[in-house]
Each structure stands twice: as structure tokens, then as C-alpha cells.
Length: 387
Ligand SMILES: Cc1ncc(COP(=O)(O)O)c(C=O)c1O
Image (cartoon, rainbow, N blue to C red; front, side, top):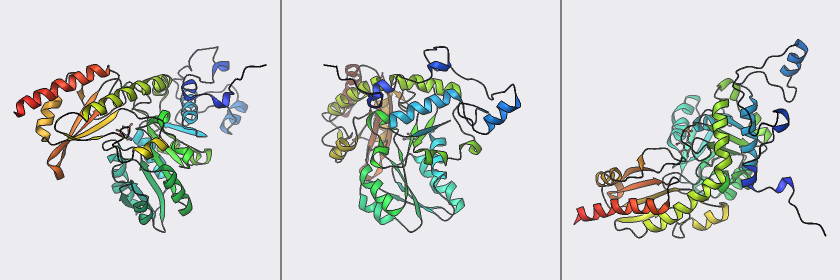
């Protein structure tokens, strides 16, 4: 009798995240070294010409290709289940390069209305210069998306879940609708990370990430990635747009990837505890978190996601001024817009239509009991003041 072993093809994501295939060429260095050089030189013209001709495993110039960046790209492609990835200087560089590869003058783009606002701005202002029109739709209804399709629609741009109200798009339904209509699909998967959602497996054409967030994970490395089939990635105009990731940032990002699986488990556990806790707090009208059974798209979330990260929002019946004071009184939360690092963050927005406020918490890696205690102290101050 022999013991069953799993093949290399069926490794779990947490194993893939800590295995890079580079050892043979780098003297057994445990991690991929940083190739901190802008160019690669050759001692004979014959070798140089063969490198310029695209000979595999040869490099010319780091704005085009760099071994350290390439290893990160291979790791991300594997984790997302894509054939190839390209890494960029920021999430926005990844997003704008991916969008530009799918549109031409006279086209029309459908985008969900709660997508990351600079991505919407890119569609709404920059692309308008090239007579590329757009329609913004809620994204929670496939019918709305279908109704927005025109003869000249070339791209459906999505972000699921969205980062303030955590709304979802049905990936399978959107991919098959778009395929029938000959439309390319892009999904921003930054919220869920490759650990908790893999849009390509539902037929989505390209996934974009701000690696600045959970993937690098330490609030010290701006970056982005586009992942898809070889055909899609080779169409990206990255060399002339010139926003390729640098080797040092690739190294920091790779370090983040290695601990991504364990960090995401902790983020998920903390967010789950916090979302349930917030439901019991006076003045909290609604808690927005797709991991909660009360979320209107919870069933869809269970169908297309393998877990939930740690952005949790809640609506209160209190004014933005009061909730900003509440945010000031928190000890463990810093006030700031980004997320995905070790530190918890808070932002407060107004909800003019309901005269209340929306609070978004990003839950870092602190102990959940300490976070709950910090929030409780701040809520108690508010409640006492309200009497
Ligand atoms: C959902 C989402 N996508 C993309 C981006 C852009 O990423 P970057 O800041 O790395 O350009 C952000 C940034 O906050 C984001 O929240």
C-alpha cells in the first residue's frame, strides 16, 4: 500500500504563497534576490542580439522585464489562477493600463457606480477625450448591466465587493453575459485578495489588484497587478506607459505574499467578531459586511467567495460631526483612507439622504478583544453625552 500524495498542481494557496521557483539560478538563496539594476549587459554582440530577439531567460532593461518583478508576477498569477501577471507602480497604474488595453475611440464602457473613485474619474474624464462613453450601473442587478449594453460596448469594469458598502456583482452571471455580447470584463479584486476570491475561474478576463493593500500588507509599498490569460496580458501597453513595478517594491510585495494566507485568516476572524458586535450597538442602523447573514447578498457571497476580509462599514443615526469626534476618541484606530496593513483605520462620511453618517472601519492585526474594548469605550462616551 502507498500513501496518497497531492501533486504539485494541487498545492493549497497557502503553500503556493511561500514557494517561489528560483533556487537553481541563485546559489540556493532562500528568497529571490533583488535585481536592483536598470539594465542587463552582455559580453558579446551575439548574446546581446539573441537577448534582443526574445531568447527565454534573458533580460535587457528593467522597465520591460526584471527577474525579481517576474517572480512576484508568477506568484500572483498562480494565486489568482491566471496564466500570467504584470506588476505596476500602483493599483491605479494597473487599472488604467488594463482599461486602455480594451478600448478605442468611439467605444462605450459599463462601470459599477461604487467602483474606486479615481478609476471612475479615469473613465469619466480622461477617456472622454478619446470619445469613449460610459454608463455607471449599480452592479447588484444583472438586468441593469444588460440594459446598459450598447452595440459599441467593449468593456464591463467591476469591483466586488466594493470598498465602502461592500456590494457584490455576480461574477458568473456577468462573465457569461459579457461573453455573449463580446465584451471584455475586468474585476478589481483588491477587497477579497486572491485568497478569498478568484474571478478568472468564473470566466472574467482580467483581474486587477492594488497590491498596496493586503497583498503587500505593511503600508510601505505602493503597487498594482493585472492578471489574466497570456493573450490578455501581452496586450497591455506597459512598456511605453512606463509604469512597471520596481524591483525593491516587488521584493517588499513578495514578502507580503508569503504571509498573506495567515494574515487574511486573522483579518477575517477579527472582522467577523466586529461585525457581530456592531449589530448590538445603539445608534447603529445597519452594518455592511458580506460575511453577515443579514447582508442582502450573503448567499451570493458564500457562492463566489472563500472568505471575507476586514473592511466593515456601519451607518449610524448620528451626525458626521459627532462620529468624527467618536473617531478622534479611538485609541487603536488611526484616521486614514487606505487599508490592508497591520494597523486599524477609520473614516467617517456623511449620509445626506438619511441625515446620519457612515463609518468605515479597516480592522488591522490587533487583538479583536482590544478593538472591541476600544470601540465600546468610544461608544459609551457618545451615549453618555447624548443623555
Ligand atoms: C478598491 C481599490 N482599487 C484600487 C485602488 C488603487 O490602488 P493604488 O492606491 O495602489 O493606486 C484602491 C486604493 O485605495 C482601492 O481602494
